[in-house]
Length: 95
View 1 (cartoon, rainbow, N blue to C red):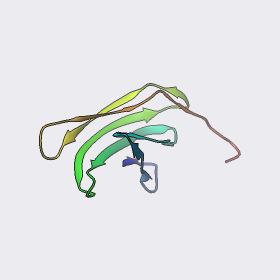
View 2 (view 1 turned 120 degrees about the vertical axis):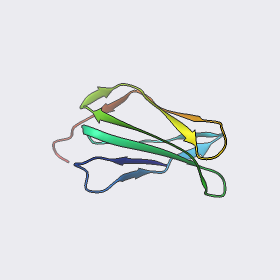
View 3 (view 1 turned 180 degrees about the horizontal axis):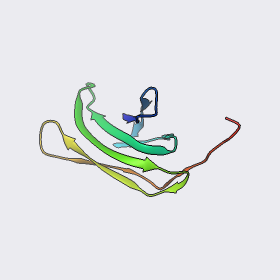
């Protein structure tokens, strides 16, 4: 689960990513702006949160760099790495 918050967002943006063969993936839409806090949570098959990581970034219009977030285990010792590939922000004035 990915949660995005920012001072100028009225409510958190929540994204549930599909897990296939141990890899979570899916689209994440974040509006351009500063201080976007991205929290990533991983859960086991019982729905218990096992890992968590976060980063705060500025999202600009156009191409943004790859973002890596290390998810720290809440119990145990094996971290998980979350990588968000290069992404673009497109502004649609009609929206």
